[in-house]
Length: 141
Image (cartoon, rainbow, N blue to C red; front, top):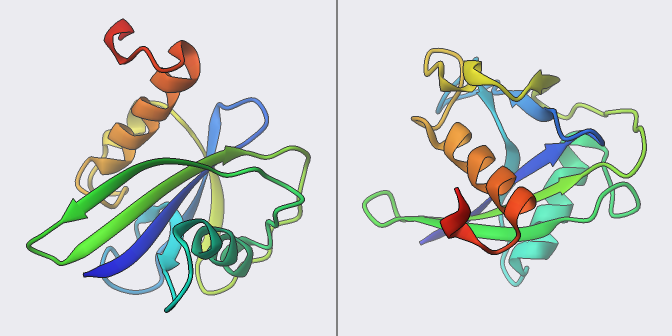
């Protein structure tokens, strides 16, 4: 099973998310969360901070990541650890391979012709926002 991570980066106001525009397949040319593969011996958190820094220049000094959920796709043999965090201050982004863009977190996230993941992006964003609004009370939404 491949160990992957996705990192949801919010701006300070929590109304925009940082997305990469994928330079290669799968989902070439589409918006996706930043993230990547965990290396041998890395914890999920270590891999998330490493990938975030490599892809964006955002470091542990800029954001505190919170481990939020796992997605396991048995048929694809992918185990995905999902982290989120809000920037603590303004940063200068450093693009690695993929172009980076701040995107408003609204209904356009449902556009599968622009956003990768077959509706996983709006689902993940919604679940994080519900948690942030209500704490652990999932029954409140």
